Length: 176
Image 1 (cartoon, rainbow, N blue to C red):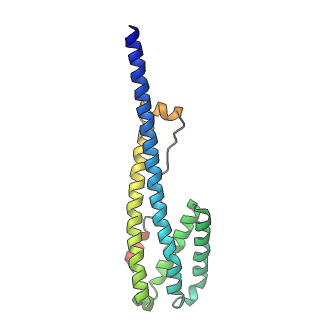
Image 2: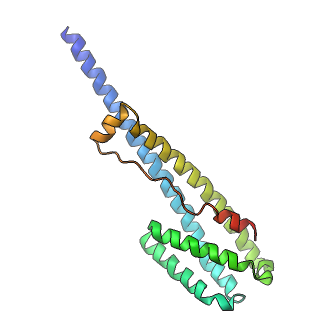
């Protein structure tokens, strides 16, 4: 009888350890995916100074927009927070819309190369977001289901937020 109780306790401990390790693994994978999104956001934002330089000569009337983009990019590089990324993305979308009004700029070889680079980065960013959201959904589901939710609450595993920013930026880059 004592062996049965000890056996059950050992099995419960092993199950507990397995569930805990699985939660840690899922959380780490989601965090790794998040860093992938950050890498592609940084690549996109690193292309912005090139975009500003290429467009400066053509867009004399929109100098304020270009200056604001440079300021927002510097703020994003300093803080790396979600608000700065969203503000920069909004300005990025506005400059892409403004470019539509400059046919000479759109025909520039330098701009065309930059456009191809932007499209590539946008595609990679979109893929990284899907991977991140998939990993976060898997993690959030795991910490919400029984019996894992008990261990998750015990060790303060918190739900992670899905990435919801600028889904239509890629569409704006395509129309150029």
